[in-house]
Image: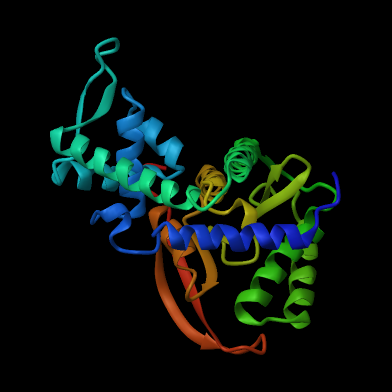
Length: 313
């Protein structure tokens, strides 16, 4: 890989944030509407791609199933979107804009074109071509990055332990101020656990993007009480968050828990990790205990979640 200039990277990040602000994505009236950013994008995609389904929209907007469902329900209630049977495949439902939706789509398109036109009027013809070609190339590169397949595999490999420690230690250092004491404890506990992986109740999973390990999760079936699984070291790299990989890792881990007939699964985490908490609760975990702790040098609120074995498993 060619050497990447950190100055260029930071400049693109800063410009991207400026574009987001200038185009109004942080405002409550994006594109002159009362819709959220995802709502505006949904109207545009449905208007430009006729015959799209909810699944197609979810993939395009890179949102999870429940979020898309709520989004479409809201747009239907506002009278902008409706569903109909596909003429070629009656089993498939496709999305369409209503008359009100088409009018809104036209206003949004006119608003967006106006923003680009106002900016382009300040540029020379050469600079307009540079901006157009550069943005298209950059968008393709981002899309190629998202399209790269993330694979989930079980068992230890060379480098997994050190990478798992690094991901967890860096996250807790950046978000909670934990230092070397925490990192050393992580390394000791992970090393001890990896030495017990022959026990059938234990499991370690890794998410790989190419040759890079971008996430880990572990199930320890021995360190708590009999019949109780301990979910440990669930972490994703920042570059891979929001792509559903964490959800897949957690699902695979819990499939192992249920197959081994553990009656309960426990995990400990910290207050403030709202996205993670939502994911846990979606998979049956409930918060049962919360208390302050300062054993790592920074006071945090430690939380204990418990998931009971689902009925029928």
